[in-house]
Image 1 (tube, helix red, strand yellow):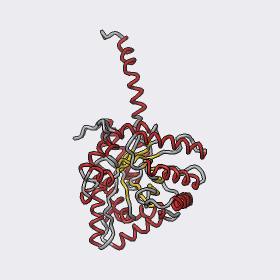
Image 2 (tube, helix red, strand yellow):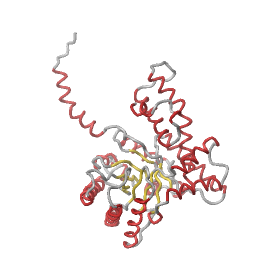
Image 3 (cartoon, rainbow, N blue to C red):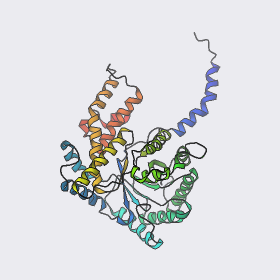
Image 4 (tube, rainbow, N blue to C red):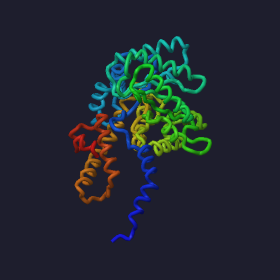
Length: 390
């Protein structure tokens, strides 16, 4: 028989009810649905309706021009199929660093033509544009480009459309982006919350503020549910920290620190994470191409092992190693993941004591492998519906 007064339950509910509500609001759980394995950044003046097919053909040509392929032979057919069928999962039409600062007349024209090209292109799983920063010198240009782009799209943006907001240093800039989205939705008759954006973390104040708090955590709150992802900006961030150009890399300790903070604050919020890019491109002599492929594949694999399932690609010849490294990661782990998950569900005793959170991670691993094409449906060991339910 319990000696505890039943009133204690009510007292605890009263005390902890607001905490329960805040945790539910702030941490609704991971985002649902597919996450792209990469984002391709394309200078806006190079956008045309056939650009996806063009990149796929260029990637396949790079493989043919520089044999042997930069991965194990058993992956070759699977990677080539991907390059032929869906070479780009997420396309970002770039009006910022990858584009430059032309005259207003030129950028106006390019904004219209790029939006028209996106509208006429084959459908993409994910797409969008990166505007210039909302900092003072580029604010008006950033807003004007987004306005013109949406007008030229001629209606509701395609599914999976996001705007990338670069060089964010303050939650107030995120609040301003929310305001801009609201005004654009009203102007173009778009559904409420129809415009969503990503925040690029590429300045030191975006990670830790002057008061020592994690600014990026405040940014997620300031976005009011519109922020879909945090993207790490390799070179702007490293340069701002003072890392010499030759040592700037996704694998530098300063990068690992920033991304670790991003992972902690985004966990459970529904905001996804993306690693950055390498500026070592697979071009030049066969030896230079192979060296760049080895570096890119190693960096992609490293990101995956750290729990960062997305990154940036800047050149068609990076696509083979993006998919090869990603496919290798999921295919190497599929048997063990499926076996552990089956043992957990059947309550069988094994040498690993898995918990519910680990079971969810195992299911998520297999789902990611299915989504990107690394695994065929009959290789996951479970139906997609079973994995999604977990």
